[in-house]
Length: 443
Image (tube, rainbow, N blue to C red; front, side, top):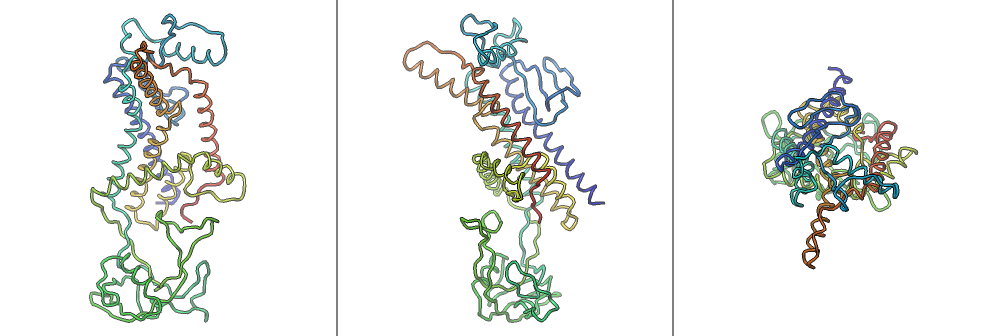
């Protein structure tokens, strides 16, 4: 199959996954809303003109032209005017007009039998459940996909089988022609180690893992030790003397660490000149939640520093600076990464499929965390409004004052529109950057 077709298939796979994640996110809102008897008028995937819709009962289900989200419309999202219980025009100012228009839209479909089916009348805990349903659904999808990745596909794990043997000793960042006189053999090449050898013993100790072997090599610089490998069904023993060499310092994220000034870090350790063959090894169920938690922690770190990260993207997009590989990307960037993964024919198909599943898992964690930011129009903003309403009512009850009633979240619409405009601007910037200066994850 051609690399171009593989690229397209990867993009389509992730596009379908994103659409399904958005659809299920909205189901997370829809199901508890219907459970609590709120009248839901629309369940839509996408924005803009409607491409297809069908009414089932009191709800219209449909797909719109711009597949960048979705929404569920519930009647009575905002309470009516407190003065007389009606919705009426206002001319006291633009901000008040925005709130009044929002209340009008929220009540335009409220019929005489819907008095107890409006969203604003729900108890605070039910409002929170309805608004938490979307992010919770993405969290569940992320955990489920993580389980498929770890328990089904497995994760790439270094084995004790040698994949390659470096011929020449080369300083970090330099190259040497293996046929030239400048090529000084690595200890592994000098000892006659070969690809596909399975290391069974090092310095008289049984080798059970690649990490264990690496630690022993790194601490054995300048000392001759024995090494035993299994080759063609039988043991072969030879002697090696690891040399002291500057090797990259690898961080917890698997990337080379940097100092405070941004310089790559190296350390002098024992070096043999062999590389490990990796294999997909299924993991136990107990590894799923820790892995999911680590993914959520990483996503939360990006979200918490989003303004600075977006500023970095803008600087890279309009200059010669490279993109931060750990920075935010748009759906265009996600699709590009998926396509590149799919087109890497040198990687086994199972590994590529696992990587795509992992990509979708990370995307769902990102959707969950981002939607919990306590700003309207995000779900977290509605949750914050419900929590404020509950706190206000508790304080009123504590001091023997009348129940202040439902919090009119429509008053926050001016700020909501500002946040929405910023989100659209950020999306446009990320899409532009992913086109002109894409993140390079694969060298």
